[in-house]
Image 1 (cartoon, rainbow, N blue to C red):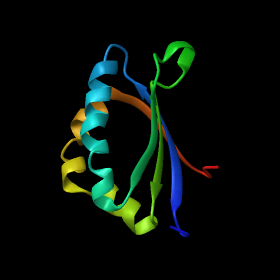
Image 2 (spheres, rainbow, N blue to C red):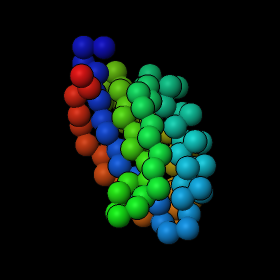
Image 3 (cartoon, rainbow, N blue to C red):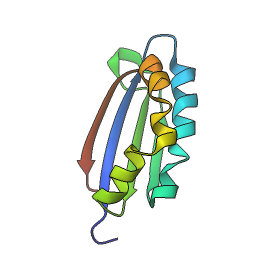
Image 4 (cartoon, rainbow, N blue to C red):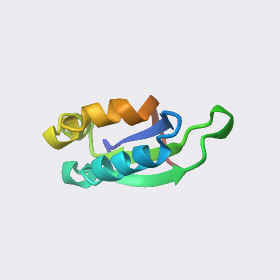
Length: 97
């Protein structure tokens, strides 16, 4: 995977919907391998003091795989649920060492 793209995602749940956000993420993260991606790590916290509730690190073979995952109809069908349970998402490229 020399052209691999590695990403970190910080997720904050809407107040009181932390479990619902985790359930949503369980569903959509199951799609990542179908697009050649890998969930390298998933950390779940309590979101205290403004910290994220979840931190994900992904590895995809390239931009086409990321685009395919983002456009997956099963993921897009869940957009209303995503908007309901997730307050903010920050996604940025990283290098995994």
